[in-house]
Image 1 (tube, one colour):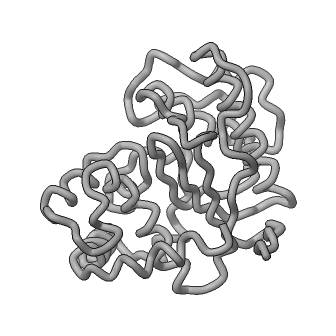
Image 2 (cartoon, helix red, strand yellow):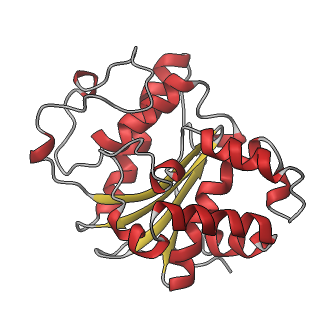
Length: 238
């Protein structure tokens, strides 16, 4: 019997996940990843997006987004984005709903907008993502504490899947790789602001601590080989 899909409630926190149809890649290059980051900002608004190209500089490959539109102060966000990671064929988001139906509307706009742009660029048709996005309600302090670690450690799959089963071969290399990965919020919590216009860090700062405390704790988790606990926490109800 399948789990009942949670209906997002205002003020609650959720883990959102989706991957490419047939596990195909959804981010083929840095331009795609930059486009998705742009979409995280532009579609997180109760107002309709009439012309997203007006805000997007496709030739700008800097990690930070230097210009996101003239009326930022007037925006009315649907959710607060607390943590994220982009992987070649999927993404994870940790969000707090702040308006009624905020999660549902945000994910509808995000999926449709990115798929349309991707299909035009690569001259394809049809769905890009594997059905409706997956959602898990974050209900406990344990989930709140460890889900950001799980999200931020995902890029290690690109160098060594051993982090998931406690058989990581080169801890020093793993730390260096994670610290240089541009497409997650890890570096924001580690003290290097990458996408300040997209992320709301204050809430998790109260849980994860200062940048120094956060780095100490995530590296201790990586060294402790106790990461098997993270996956069931992260994927519960997805």
